[in-house]
Length: 95
Image (cartoon, rainbow, N blue to C red; front, top):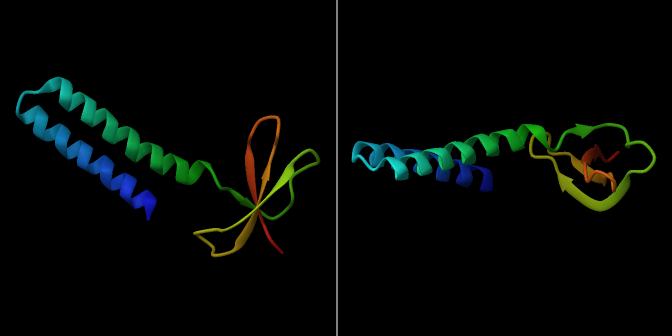
């Protein structure tokens, strides 16, 4: 739901950019255009970059955060582990 709203905001920014460019207001057109592209691409990138679900627990040194979330794609419950050194997170299927 939130992802769709952010993408919609990006589309609105792009539409405003086109309107401002048509009116000759180039600084505003560039700002809204760039903002729209960042919102859309950032949201799409985040969806594929983060939340990779794996079957096996991570190696020693990773900490179970206690978080349990439902994976949107599979509907499975996953446990969240974090690497305290890097802040990287991994999502492991709960068996």
